[in-house]
Length: 436
Image 1 (tube, rainbow, N blue to C red):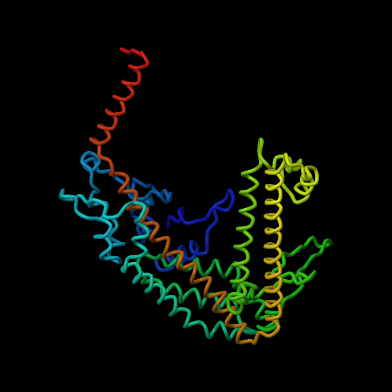
Image 2: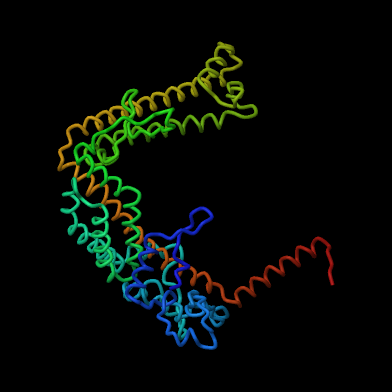
């Protein structure tokens, strides 16, 4: 087994992921031969004169990627080689009509031309019916897995075994996604294991130890100078800081306070607009000979204090009419920004208080829905959808690479070189430069 390419960088070290370990174990236990990854090597080959019992893995497994060979004919005459497009057959078998959208004949046997601009390839793939159908089928596989285990997860309580639980979830996920084309089942497995290690395992330990209702209760954030622990709070109510270990406040907001969040977002947009207006006005009127030049502090800022100080200094002097108007305008903009910030803060405080109060009224069934559906399943689903999106990036990247590689054939480049050379010669001639 040559698993040298399956790892993730962790600082200056290479660390095996859960999927790497699982794949190694599966391949070994099942004695599976995987191209460029594993082989069952007979003893006679190991004992041959060519190897002489040398167990260096590269002697038996060539794990190198297939060579990407350029087509000289395409470089000379243009067009995209059909063999390069044929090499993407795993995609065409899943997206059977997409190929004819991305490529079309260019008049020469064995060569094609782009059917879509390079910058539009990914958008074309994402919007194509074949991809939408595939994405829907992947979502259907996930829904089947979710439905099979939802009752198990909602029934967690004292006595449950986290180890047995993750084994059940992961084994079934591998089985269900084994037959999904293009997607590597071990990449999907990693989506689950990442969420398990980062979130789900701690949640389940908490549920087993304290139960659903007690586990969902807010607790005071730890701030201990002696123990050198200072937790970042999830909510701050007055002067009290709280942590929500099982149900983050964002889940409460998304399910129960969407309208309140929309109000905060709208006010935030208005505040950002007020800040932008102020910034643009100050930028326009500061600098050398700017109307606000004398209202800039030593630290380089225009503040309410410096503006009021400058207004007091110039008084009603008619010589400073334009400056006075600019100072009053910037003062109004400063006040508008301050009002907008206060409005945002008031709305955020009100929302935080409503969210905090909602924790006390959550029924156990609501808690289970928030945790199982909105937290666990939603995160795993999003990660798997990310793997599907990564497939489109791989296809779009290869199509774009082929398009750009053969976009300008040699005769065109030669003509451009001649034209540029002629221009350079003309410029040099006008400058009176001579060369042999």
